[in-house]
Length: 207
Image (cartoon, rainbow, N blue to C red; front, top):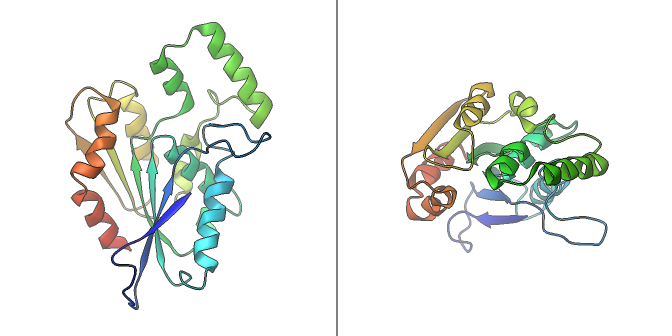
């Protein structure tokens, strides 16, 4: 997990913000395999948010969640837990960039069916359920903060209807930004650095 101070670190103001980025987990021990696609990584996100909230230098800061790709599944699963992210009042907003769940990733990657079957068995062994059958979409309505969804409409690696479904399930103040970029999933990620004004405007409004 990473968090960044918005503005100049040396400035002392009555109002400060933190942006919490939720990337997929990197392997950190022999007992924690890399890339569990969301459910296990929720503990990292909740721990990071609690750390910021309880840190002496940050406890009064508002937190914005920047979730990219499968990071959105991590954040959404974390809202579905009790207690989860909804129990941390300092979290004020979320941006979900190109949300993607496991089943669509496997289809886009073009894995043979026998490998997909083995992967499903392994995920069920690790998590207790099949990631193709239980996705983070069932927890979207538990998100409690204003949310912006960002998606390249020409992204070949996702099902656009699934992104629309994610957005429709949100029960909070929301907006969606459709990007018209190259037929490439990374194009949506690269756009974050090239044109960050929409993201910064959204966070500035809510943090």
